[in-house]
Length: 335
Image (tube, rainbow, N blue to C red; front, side, top):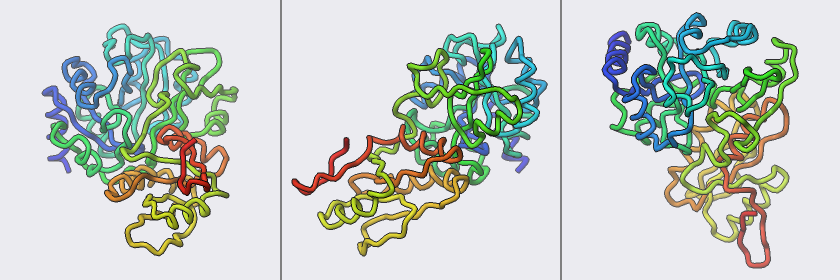
């Protein structure tokens, strides 16, 4: 393992790109002080140049290297949730490259909760940028294999840390305003944060609503190559049955057992527990997306509730809309 860490650190110091594991998803790492290396991250991901990147650090003390005017609230949250799946938006340090921040005066920072990556960051001795290690807008990777399938040899080194424990991206909170804002939902919920800070939080779910650009606010994101459609739970079995009767081959992600007797159909029965569902969501979507003979992916909408909101957000942005059955011409049309 130390040999792998040494190789990863050497690549980073040489301006290379290293895919690394976190508890959320795999990141595409580059030295945050090296603009040439950062530019390669944008190029390989095909990421819009004005979309900011998150800085990953090893210790709370390193915040001051990347941010200024750090509010006490930030330190409270850091002590409560770091290392962990919470990204904070803070006023950026003047020495931070505008390439990282998308020419904004704010910066996104977090400490990942993965022992292998924390050790890499400690040995590297500075911050690394780390957007998800995938083509922009596509399904995020939660294993080293996902990174290989998507980016392949474009990455200089992949630090294999197994499957990600959380499985979806971190919660992003903006604390540069008087009213803290959740800009992206994650497994750390509004209730979790409120217990610490005692403040009301404002949800900002689209680019149009936010004055700050952060990952995941695009209307379409986390998407498979195949079209993905969401179906309300009470309609799911009827639509799946209708599709099967019409010989329309789709793949399915559902809380319910498969009833279709067809070896060509891929049907994944998902967990009822939101934490387990989140952990496996992108793995399931990668698997369903690789089903060559399927026309698309049909997903049963998860239930409402604070623990499911981050998952619903990901699925909604990954989808081509909700599906309704038009029985007259015997086919289904997306709304």
